[in-house]
Image 1 (cartoon, rainbow, N blue to C red):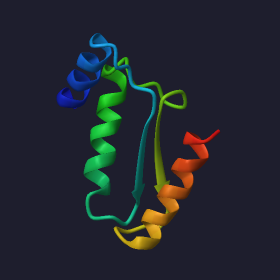
Image 2: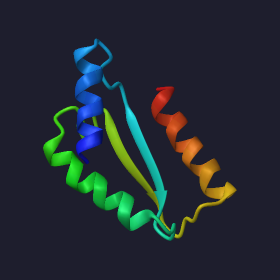
Image 3: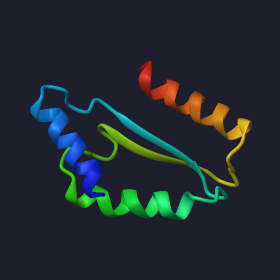
Length: 83
């Protein structure tokens, strides 16, 4: 959490503001709970992350760490990045 906030703040100070951070996860992935927890704690204390504006945490119900999930994550990321 601290490292994310510091990295984003340092980047903004150097003229490299966050344009978009898109986190994707399957809810059956082994690290899902940890990753979701980190981001839930980070959002309230990191002004550079604005849910729905320059940050999103997308969850695939039943998703695991496999090629199918990666393809779905890539598809959803492209919907945002190429608007």
